[in-house]
Image (tube, rainbow, N blue to C red; front, side):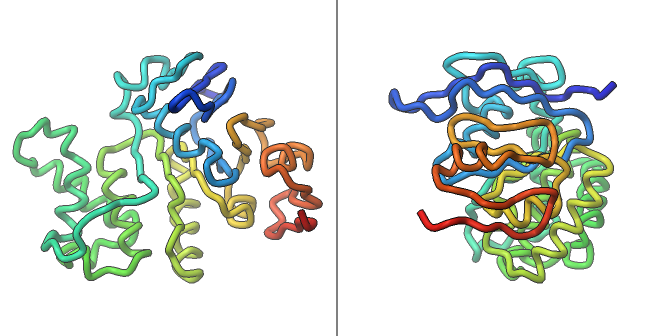
Length: 249
């Protein structure tokens, strides 16, 4: 029987009285690789923040490894949509990844074990040879790998990715998704993306979100689900075929 690691039951969130998530229920099991697609402003980033405990629902229940998200945050690695930093700030790749151990270090000096885990995370994402380089001198794709390494340094069981391929060229995107293929063997991955093509080609399960969630615990999405979420006619997206056809609307 699959082990459930994240559970949302009838979750609703409002910002300024406006609904962002409505009656969302979702069960995520260990080693799932779920892609969450949907239009901009559909609540995808908010959903991740609910799982992290950063946003408290107005209604419904959220459980992470059987407990409150804020009590079990250490099991989750998070790569936000935008990692804002001063490109000219002289910080090395290794030092950036070490900040992923800050929650474990509790404001103490980083230990030898912290550094070992940071180096291991860099090796996992293929960035170990650049550990001494200043992060501002890296390409967008290389920086994204470093931010993933920072999340991995905390030894999470679940990795949450918010639009991780945004701003990465097509060649680096291919390498990036190859990295996720390796990571899904050892952890649960939840990836938010607006790119239906990429998601359908790589993930094992797909959910569609536009305030309401359309999900069938599989890679299949019904055309009526997509039309309801995107509010436009959709002719084809199925079976992981890496293309889509939309009628004019």
